[in-house]
Image (cartoon, rainbow, N blue to C red; front, side, top):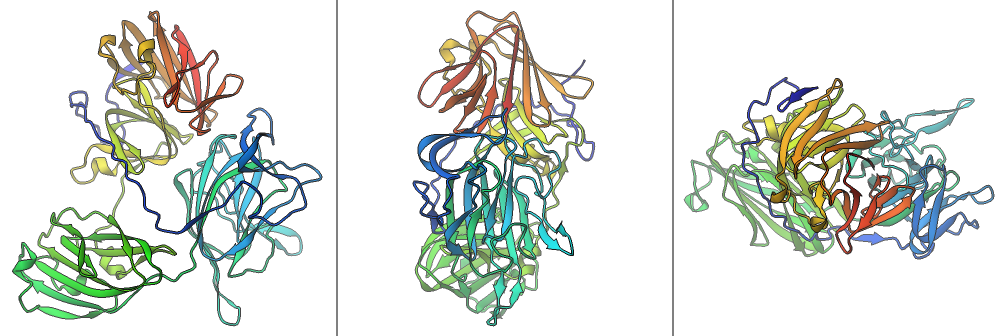
Length: 621
């Protein structure tokens, strides 16, 4: 094997020729922000079946927990209690489940668990099926795989299927793990005579955090609906005549209101190289008028101008509202005369979000901006989301698209690939830590991981496409790249530890262990084996994708030290769910390891193996 410290690949075959070993470690503080509820979400109780119509069958049950058997198809075992909805069909009991309440436009979120080789479906308005399937490890998903919008059915003269929409990527997890689906749906539209004038639309579907559908028109009901006739409002239906499946945490946002309306926009334009509002506010404007929507290009110049926009919004329902805006130049936003935001750094023009309580009825809105720099692209975008309406744009299309569009620099893994960059670990949408010594390993199986050379840990794994390297290469860049898929964050802590540091969440090795990274060696498939020394032991760490499904890790330790342990998992919840099989983080992922032990208590339970010359375990996700 050839020793390789700096082998990197990009779409432009650029060689990263600077050493990140010489850079100082960067530390970041995690700030937890409590989210405000914008939409009025309604959780569906799974303490009983009262949300659903009576089926007269017994395949649908309420339980407190469910568990799949990876070796047995169509099997879910359950525990008595409440909180989970489970379908356990048999020959006599195979009924679908239909909600009593009907919905038009809505957002819905739910978690589901598939039995091995199981098949089900979640129908929007009882007519449009989102496929639920054990598609774990499928490389090229089709319409019948998990998250697919199922095909339509036609008889002409024989039955055949057509249309349908496959998910963009396969983000499906292993059977028995809880998966999350987020759906945003727009109902079909009808005129006063009941004629359909617009198709239903799936605005977006996320599976396990990654968008798999966006702006998909549904020309009609898919196979197996409650009716072929489309309606303005319809129920949810869950397929119960196929395989075993479980659900929890179903919430629905009924989006019944029209969005807030905007009145005429009065604008004033001032030309000059202004530094502050005081320099132009008392002057006569160089141009003024009325527009239908917000738009920066009421100015005839691309820079050296200031603009004031005054309008009103008619709010349909009082409550918390989310304002998003992306404005070139310094800017100030006031509502009903109160300043809610200001930005005095002209180059800080990324999209921003503010949450504000708004009353029902008319509210005054004023936006003031100063644009002086030629290098800053012109744009003015303004969006509002309310308790019962989706995010709505109140700017002209050209006002926002007039800015330079992003041209992402994407890196695919059509063959095994190793790419060095900074990597930001994210928590609740915020960066919790930047890895300065990250190695990203891509695989054509669409299962990838990031290895932290500072401590010998797998920091994250993800399904889907490989990397977005735009932050690294665009303009001056910041040296980082981002995963393009559904990400599982793993405890970023040293693998080999002494018993006294078993529960430590410190991401750096104990200085007494004299940890030294030795880079990595590439094999004939261009895959790395990571090398380091710790406490006098020499480590070879080999991580490989198996069957397009999971990661297998083989660790060779020369001269293992007495008392050392291999910390292969860390979580507040670790349960043994099968022979040598452990579920972590509320059944978010599995670790398979012979001879493992669950140690510790409280938040930091630890799954360990005793140190020996050869260690093997797998991460199934």
